[in-house]
Length: 314
Image (cartoon, rainbow, N blue to C red; front, side):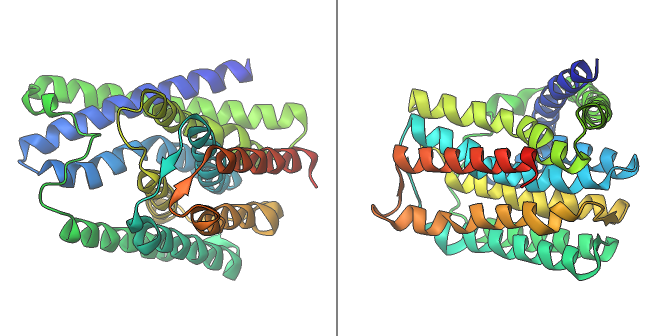
């Protein structure tokens, strides 16, 4: 029964996230916000909504370990699983902006998160506010330095003509689906943790993290298989930045998140930092600015090792 709640929770999160993205984009068009800005801000925030609701629900229901490991695990899965499998499907070309801006910013946010958690074993409201403020500064910099003709592939022009009634309906459906999806997922995951005798941190960094990364994996693999557009490594890295700064940042501002599981600071967060750091030698050696199928396979193997160690407790 617990597994059924988890599956239903995942489905509702995917549905809710999709409706929220559509409604947010349509609403942005109503306010005459440019397509470029919508792609960089509105879509990014809306696609982080499922992770935000899961972490918030976990923190409020007394499971802070899930709140943190949901984000840490998602960031590991984005690189090890999503990027790895996508590269195995089609070789990924890497843009120079990746190592000049996106990667350094992701590393800064990751290291700052580690410092905040290690410092006093809690992510306080003030620290959450600092993370979120950092994200706003990063977005302002991105928008100011973006080319005027840049348009995001994620933004659908047809949403500019949607009626107010439909936008309102989408918002209601999206909000309801995200609320119940996050509640069922967290409660089901907690029950599974108890039944198989593992900690909530293990379930958060594995089952929940993979689940919240599935939509990105599906979208990336389909795009790579069809070769309709270049797979943007920047989007994946952007997702990791948003996970730390908006998901954990906003959750901590609503309710401080204590570190209740030692494995979070002793192993999980180091795996996240390791997967993030390995990207630089990966894109330069042996062939520059390219993630080949072999490199993608190596990432997936690394992720498999991580999952094995998580469940065996080594």
